[in-house]
Length: 87
Image (cartoon, helix red, strand yellow):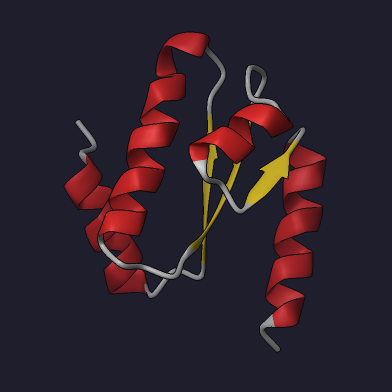
């Protein structure tokens, strides 16, 4: 089982600037909230992008995500735009 502690540690270990979280079922959506909360509680400046079949812009905003992607193509485009700003 992938725990929040493992996710946060992986972000730290890899110095991840961006993390993507996807949910395809409403039953898994609360884990988006929990994961974002754990990232923020750890004081990480990592940007969080969320998306998936059941995720909306409103939900992304409520969960505290930095970026919402309506589909995989949008996620790639948002990630490319984000990483371009780091250059």
